[in-house]
Image 1 (cartoon, one colour):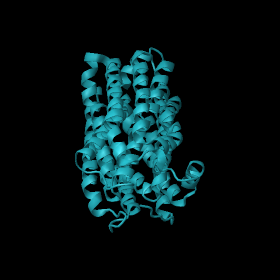
Image 2 (cartoon, one colour):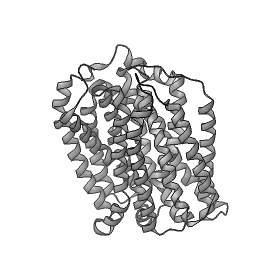
Image 3 (cartoon, rainbow, N blue to C red):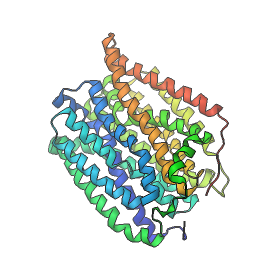
Image 4 (cartoon, one colour):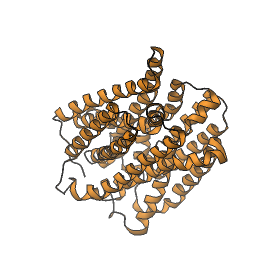
Length: 418
C-alpha cells in the first residue's frame, strides 16, 4: 500500500462499483433454483441434467480461479473484473436465446467465467486500498450485496416470469452486466491511478511460486477444507437444491418455495449485516485482540451441522424455518477468506482469495451435480422423491461432520502478514 486507506466519497465509489457486480453475480448463481420448473417443462430435463446445467456456472467459475489470481495481482482488480463482466454479459445473452441443453450449458459456463472475479476483485482492491482492520467489515458488506442479489432471484424473479419469462430475465441481466463493466472501468480508473496500485505489486518469484506456497501452507489447507466441503455444499443447496427440498420433501407449491427461499436469503443478508457490525468489534485482527477466527468458525459450524440434522429428522411443515436458521449460522464461515488473505503477503492477496474460491466452487460443482445424480440413483432403486432427496442430503451432512472433526483436531497455525 502506497498511501493512507481510502475514505469518503472515493471509498463509497469503490464499494458501490464492486458491490453492483457481486449483486448480479450472486443473482445469476441463485436464479436457477427459481426458474428450474420452467427449464424442466420446456426442455424435459432430468434431475441430473438440471444439476449439470446449473453446475456449469461453478465448473467454469472454478476453472478460472487460478489464472484469475495472477491477473488480479498483475493487472489490478479494475481492469480484470470489467473485462470479464463483458464475457458474463455475452453468456447471459446466449443463455436467453438458446433452445437446447448444450446451448444453455455454454451460456451458463460463460456466465461463470464472466462473474468469476466479482468477489475476488473486490477483496484484492480492499486489501490494497483499505486498512487491515476494515477487511472483515468490507467483506460482510459485500456479502450483503451478494445476498441482495440472491433475494432478487427469488420472489421478484418469480413474479417477473409470467411477464417477461426466464429468457427476458436473462436478457435484462445481460444489459446490466455490461453497464456494470463500463462503470468499473471508467469510474474506478481515477481511483486506481491516484492509489498507484497497478499490477506492479507482484514480488519477484511470486508468479512462479505463489500458488505453490499457498497450497503447501498447512494453515491454508486446514481452512481450505471448509471452503471445499462446507461452503461448497451450502452454495449448492442455496442455489438449487433448497427449492427441491421445499417442493419434494415439504410439499410446497412453486410460489411457496420461492417465498421460503426469499426468507432464507433475507436471513442470510441480515446475518451478514450483523456480522459486519460484530466482527470488527469482537473478532481478532492484526493489531487488535479478540475472538480467534477458527474459534468463531467452529462454533458456527457446529450449530449449522446440528440444524441440518434437525432438518433431516423432522417432517413438520414448519421445518422450512430451519433453512434460514442454518443460513444464519453459515455466515461465520465467510470470515475465513478475509482472514486467510491477512496470513499471506499483500502481493499474494489475489491468489490466496482465488485459491480458496477454487476449492469452494469445486465443492459446489461436485455437490450440485452429485445431489442430482444421487436423487436419480435413489429413484432407480425404488425410493420416493422425498426419501431420495433426504438420502442425498444425509450424505452431505455426513461429509460436513467428518470435516468438522478434521478442522477442530488440526493444530496448524496462521502466519501474520499485514
